[in-house]
Length: 71
Image: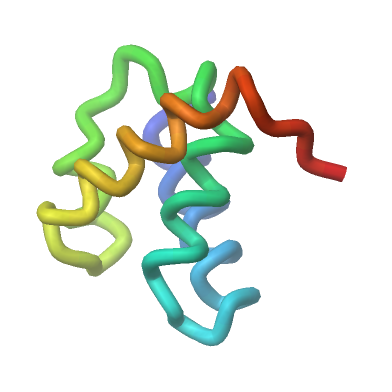
């Protein structure tokens, strides 16, 4: 997945969660853990318009991914 595609998907997820970044970021990290590999997460945050500090929250979601099944 390209960086632009990740940005678009994250924007959609943020909008779907009423702009509440924490749940959206965790769920995005779980759902797109593999696609995010090789991408700069702080840059992704900036391009979406959220603080670079959310990069750590993405990391938490990515670490949970092997243990979670989204339906």
